[in-house]
Length: 256
Image (cartoon, rainbow, N blue to C red; front, side):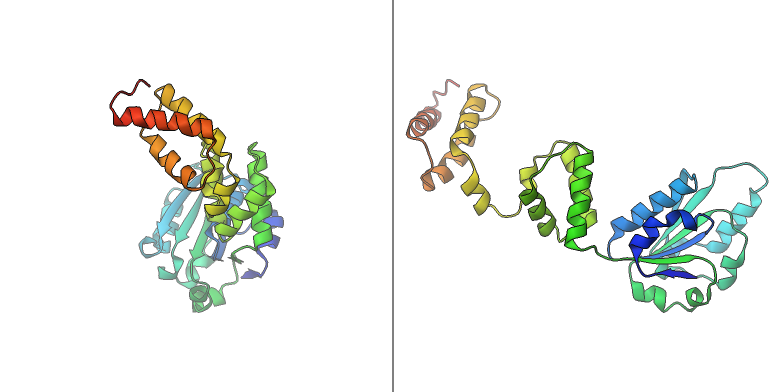
């Protein structure tokens, strides 16, 4: 078996493994495993994949199935076996002339290293996908957002990456949420700093405008008014207007 100690080498030279049929991935960062699978499918022109859970996977049955339909033209598959530490395998299974690709994933690196069958294999590629460093996660996150036309300042980027512990799986979920239009502010860690930097007069402007247009309930004003009054950040004219609206709500004569 060919062992790779640097996962970045695997991504850089993945085309060199085009002829390989067996891949064994251990991981701390599962998102990298998913990217590796996508690239393997791309370089091998594979569009179909089958997923198995370790306990449910039977290598012998899969080999027999492939042989029984090998006389007919069919699309190639990539077989992904999750929780492979629970899979019972024999060395002879890997010595068969198999056309499809197999990816065995192990959430526990030690489970793979202790498996005697894998130690004796001559075929296949082993790669470990560790948790990436903060700088790498920041670079990746920034690139993914720019490709989608999403602009976030550097300070906010660093805050989000730091708060997510540089987990690419979590950051990738953020990218998808941003694409759907989710406000970036929702993912900025800490509230005290953010509140100090807000334009409170603009907030009041927006809330009052939405109340007048009957797009939101006047009751929302209570949630805005109380914290702003407490922090002494309210413009006097807006404070009077908000008090009038609140009084009308209280007297049940709301004209908005």
